[in-house]
Image 1 (cartoon, rainbow, N blue to C red):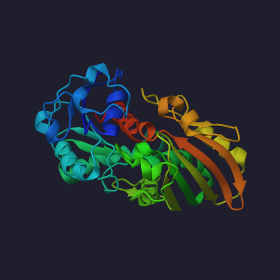
Image 2 (image 1 turned 90 degrees about the vertical axis):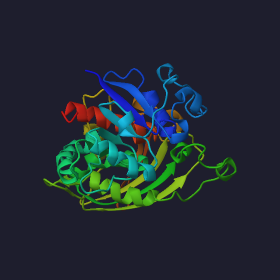
Image 3 (image 1 turned 120 degrees about the vertical axis):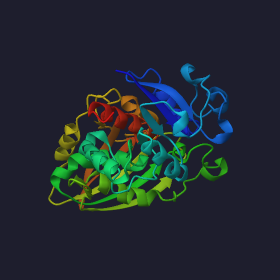
Length: 342
């Protein structure tokens, strides 16, 4: 079983991570890499600043980049690492032309007929694809994954929903790679924390309610609890760390929370980790340098699970460009294949 794929926006930080993660993928073979007009016809290895991702995979080094145009792409699946403004223009052209688009971009995440998917959480939301194709008269379709910060704590909230969620508060400590390359100026972030990331808090307060919502037949009924987020950029290269406070409908013990976390099972997909949620019992874990690559970057790591005056609080960490971005889109595409959408 082999499917040809294309990466849109292949030279950016997330695009580079797609190219890395797709090397030797058992199902997907990169057939083309698409980029901005100034890079068309140039070799990928010559156009990417690999100070970001260390090594350009050999298979991609001499690939000549093609335009962001369906006419120049021959693939079963298209991965999008495009900026939101460009994605809003380009992605529908590929979906209309019959491509399966698995996007990391934010442009269409909150559209009523676009699935916003984390496979272990809401695979059933893929049923929106038929609604989307019918409504938009597309031969193909578009599926998205949530923003990198939301993904980490939503994976932990899913198994806790059995206890009845009343409210959630999160404070993020987000890695520099989440800002792209060259990202935050060194003199701004060295010896510093930046307590504002544009649009991040809004995404964290809305996207999870769609992901954790219920498919009603033609739309998603959003989950019914409140989320309050405060997001911060910190001098860490990779790995978003998040402090989470959860208020429940009833009293819930630490042991019940741990058992719930353990109950979230991986899927039988090539990019699935052995454990979706890994619990660390050390008092000072998780930490980005020690834990971000757990499960090849596809697990989230939880620690410091404890009670407080109004519920349970804990720390969750995940690799923002793997589980939170390129790896998430690849996992979505694997699910599309398994469920017969591709």
